[in-house]
Length: 219
Image (cartoon, rainbow, N blue to C red):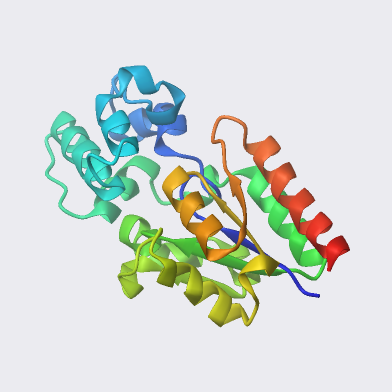
């Protein structure tokens, strides 16, 4: 039976902004060490990140805060996420794609598995044109982006877009996300899940591929 690897984008396929402060500072002309928010890499020093994890603010609100703060550092006022991400990551989003993600995508594709992305803010953060700069996205059978559906994970309907679009049952899908609330949503939908650890990307992808293989063996 055909199975599917369903990936979040930001953090899972692309490196987080927390991991690329050096690139961001260089792009913005800021001294090294200017950007100090570290999110999951140092939660104790990031009050806003802890608030988001505790449900006191949304993920979009967290990034809106960082967008405003970073814009002020360079005397700019950014009102759209693509302005923020574009300035920090420049014109080459491929430079921040995880090599572990590309390897896992290739392995799943070569094994005949379906590939899908389930994102809350793919084009909202990067802009609609960025996909042209990432050729590997052509390997995906389905991309569901809440920028357009307006249905955000962990809403059950978000996972339904995946199963309906791929014509698979939830149990046939291995869902990978770096946010626990979204993983809980995937669990509730009946998907097999991997809570992606951005500090250990290789291990997280290894678990996802193992699930994809072991679930095949059981079917």
